[in-house]
Image (cartoon, helix red, strand yellow):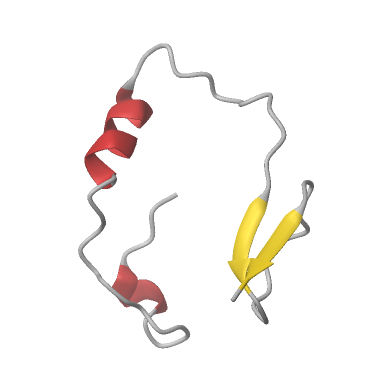
Amino acid sequence: MICPPEAIAGRVRVHGRGGTALRPGTDLLHRADDLPSRVRREHACLIPRGARLPFSARGPVFRVS
């Protein structure tokens, strides 16, 4: 689910506000008829050191500085 920056701007610090160069590619994947709804591969989370995930990670969590 995509949330507009204005909806969370009072609670978090928002950077960019314009998407990324990857956005057209992700939009294309979301529109693809043959994109699987569930990816059956192991996933990992990459987060800054000291940050926390808002959910319990099922895979490994890597912290970077």
